[in-house]
Length: 327
Figure 1: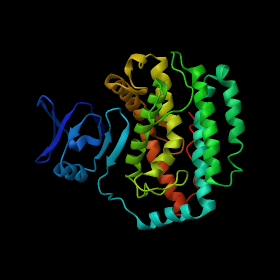
Figure 2: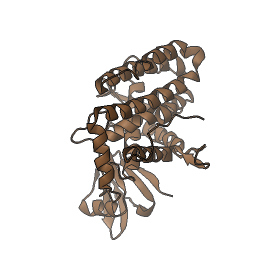
Figure 3: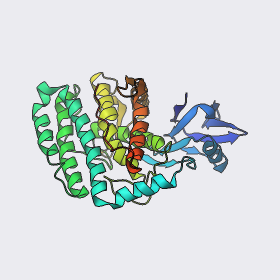
Figure 4: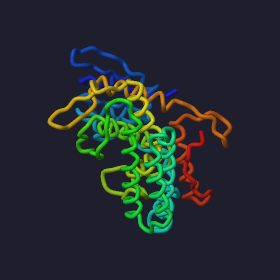
């Protein structure tokens, strides 16, 4: 089974024959089983060359780079072998048709709201006011006539949703407003870090299908970003990232000692990242009995299934209905 591998130390990644080695700053050498790696996440300052990238490409390993503060910087994606011109043309046609684009964008947000409400209804004795506020905003989604209008509704819903965390979290983590660049408090730092992991995981699953990751529907397609991964992540942030955040804080796996504050910029330190990633990997590997497929499906595989549903929608096989967790 393929796994993700995380590098926190500074050093050098190098290829020797058909093996990857990591040399840390003290020249300690460790081999990495390229045949068993699906994604490489690099959090340290690491050098590498084109020979390494060629080997990663041969084995379809994605290399995700994060900066010193744990913020996502970019991804090296191997050449996509699962191409389908027909699928990409149909995907683009759905973007160009205003009505078709709006339908898909609304479906992403319907699913996101479903999962947000699912999270805070578990604490409904404390979050009733937020549930009501979100439900009232969600009623406006169906009548929205532009993507910009949808994004405005989504922003207000998410503000209510994150405010509810103040009544859910047991430690002294508080939410005032969403700050991203940079995060200004530990909770925002956790949200940003978790969302970055979600974007890269979704991107990795998109690349296993013929979908074009640059053609999106809720987020505007642009140069230098894989905006379809942002779209699909709307579904999975409240389903996967936020439960990990809430559990990590409430079970005291992550505490205030796992953050550094440099001139008002707050980020997870190395120990905090490692602890969060363990919880993240455990969540991705958790499997659920799928009521249609009649077999166990992991959270990670649910992301791929969502890609397949989109493809069926684009080529006219089946109307897209987004995932709404039933368990």
